[in-house]
Length: 545
Image (cartoon, rainbow, N blue to C red; front, side):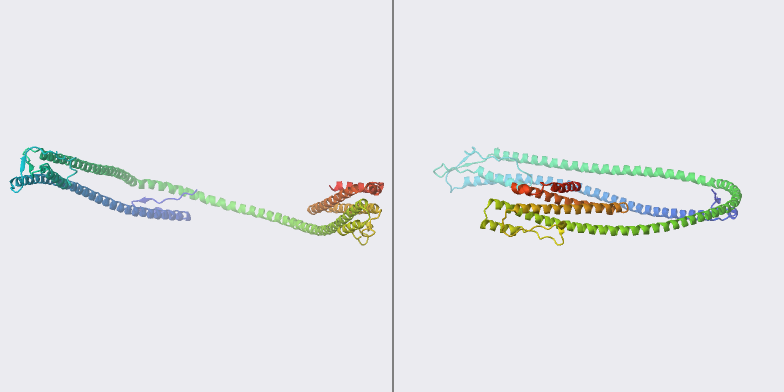
């Protein structure tokens, strides 16, 4: 690992001697370029941070000023609210005093009016006899219930009290038949006025107490608000003091660190000079080692180049041999592929021929099954005709039934060229004829059907053997095609075997249902030849199953 000598800095300048001695190399230039780029990047980041801090500081100062302004406004509003409460209480006190004076004046006015009215009535000569009395009236006056409601409703209560006084002081006597009157003069020590004054005083006391309670509650609320504000202000001041103490502590720490860095920077140039000398000595030693290593590297490079060229030549020769062998192998594989393709084409052709033969065999089997079904229908008709002939007499009704049966199940026409193994089927003698030899004819037809079944069985066996032989030849080369052909052949053989089983069961049931006289002459299961022919049929069917 090569070490790059750093220039020594003394009092902000670079020594020109060391700079001249340094040999500019690509590593040194790259190193200084990276340092300059890193310094510029750090400088831009620092400037961006300082700008961001300045913006945040201005915003913080604006927010603090707004908060202080709002706090002062809130304090002024709270002071104004307290003054308004004080003015309100003073005005309410004056209002209550004026209402009390108004009530006193109204009471005096009512008493004076009553006295004047009583004096005028006593001095009037036109009236009848008037008796003056200082005794209480016969009907006691109605007392006022409850204290006054409030200071604001004092005028209404005074009016109600005046009306009561008017009713109480003058009470005319209706019992005097001579037209005389009794006037009750109010005395100086009357109790009604005293009661009214007492009620008035009680109402005033209640209102004064209520007013005092409201005033005390308001003063307590103002005190609570002032205490809360003082607590908030004290808390904010405490926070501010703590924050300022922290800032002072950080400032002192920064000052201490800056002083320490300044002292270290004063001694750093001497340390850097010593390090520079050590690095120069190390650089000289490393330069000598580098020259020796460069010579060794050149020799090693030449040797490695020679060895690499030899290895490349050997690899090229080996690859050429592999290419030739691959070409020969590819030619063999291509020839083998062409042979296999030709064999595959032949096998496909054979498979198509087998498929065509199987389709033709299936078509022949279908035709044979159709013919056998028709023969079964004809045999069934003949059996029915035989039973009808034995049960009914030879008359028109029997002829009519025979004709209907002929129309429903006519005899099948014989196939041209000796289909069904070259055996021709015997037709009936004539429509509506019930001869005594009908049972023999039925037996004859059954024998022909047995022969036809044997022929179908032989054809099925031949088809199976041929299909198995061809499948055995092609199974080794094209396994999939042989498997498909064997599956199709087995399916067709199974279907044909099922059809033969059904036909045999049907014929057996038909022969069993025939009369005893006709069944004895039928060779189905009675003769040795029939047994010998029927036996392979069952074996063949079991083999297909």
